[in-house]
Length: 325
Ligand code: PEP
Ligand code: MG
Image (tube, rainbow, N blue to C red; front, side, top):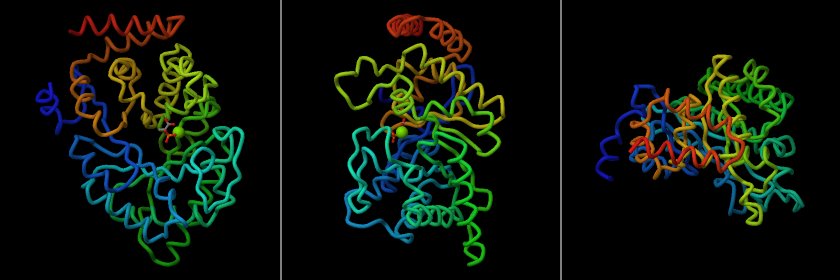
């Protein structure tokens, strides 16, 4: 089996009927970039930058961040890296920010919600990403967006930082793309408006599952309710992909769901532009994808969305697997 997967390593992700689906890697540090690309990643769909801020006594400097992004770009060799701005606060505490503990960290003060208070931290990160964008294909992505106000505010900040760099004659990619995580359900209902303001979306299935189904992703007591095969969740994902594509924009998925082999036919049926996952899952995903017919996957997804329970969806997937062997 390993040998079979090896054969797909250097090939672009593609279904049996020749439809492209980019298979990318999630990384949390530039040192993970080289092994990710060696594993067949076609891009980095999610660079989680929060680790760069955690377990230390002070925030990283602009220079430090700039060097880290540049290192990652060196390994990328022309391939795209989506840098997600810091997703800290809440359940990812950073001591030096002195954010008080909260009863509901997942519903609390985290990610884009803390940027206004820690403005210089956010500007420093934007500056470092912009400066690195002069050396390769970087994109910026903002986590936990829940409203248009936040998008407009982020765009204002980005414009301000860009203007400052211009005035200092520091080079950067003027056309750098800005995207958002689709992980708070409210965004699902303003996709048309978001498409007028931003370039791309990436579905954070980990958080979208927890927020859509109101289930704490870390609470063992409720894991049986944390089910991404819930037909309501599948309908939500499909709706999002269709809405984004109707506006001609790009949408990937970067939650753990992308690496779940059994669910792959459903994701293929949705017609996503990219699946981003932990690097070790890439070879098997590419090999599985090569066996799948997108029209059969679409039919399967339609059936799954008409199921009434997650268990029915599970049975449907099991049946589908049998027909594939
Ligand atoms: C997600 O929510 O699915 C995601 C990719 O982000 P994180 O797991 O870092 O919250
Ligand atoms: Mg998330």
